[in-house]
Image (cartoon, rainbow, N blue to C red; front, top):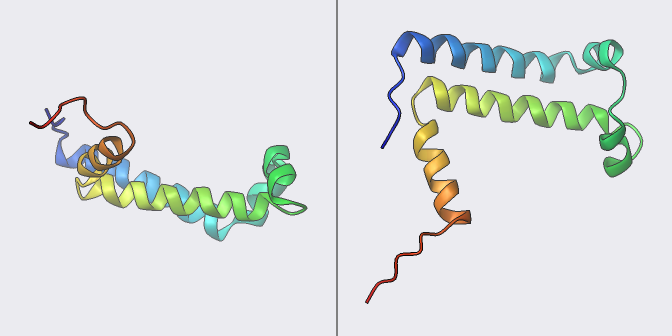
Amino acid sequence: MPVVVSLPFRLIAGSIFVAIGVLLVVKTGAMITWTGPISWAEDKMGSGGTYPFLRLVGIVLIFFGFAFYTNLIGGFIEAVGNFFLPSNKRTP
């Protein structure tokens, strides 16, 4: 059963996600100065791996913000869930 979320909440929450994502993509250097390097990203992605990691997180936040904003997030989560967790129903 889909969850019904009011339009004002979707607009505000989606805008917040998009704003944080844009901030991460545009001001990556300032965010790294503020938080410091992320050791996991540096280990897995090499030296300077924090920069692309934060940009990737920002792009994902922008995607989910627009999906929540347009009320497409439920269908997206259902499609991904059905792909990774197929139902146990057997067809005759």
